[in-house]
Amino acid sequence: MKTLSLKLDDGIFADSEKITSELKIARNRYINEAVKIYNLYNKKRLLKKQLLKESKAVRKDSMEVLAEFERLLDGD
Image (cartoon, rainbow, N blue to C red; front, top):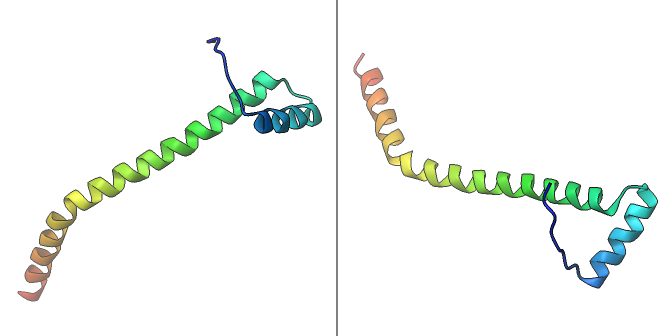
């Protein structure tokens, strides 16, 4: 595990303290879980961005292949 110093806005800290108290979990565990969930969210966002980029890159080739298949089918 890594140790780090963390500065939270007062409101965020107060909310976190209230929630950790009600859930009866350690502040450290709560923050770890929050960062884990946020990392998953951002990984999905980045993957979506990459897939859109790659999809746009192959769109022209895909349309050309589709047109070729249609020509082959029309030729029968």
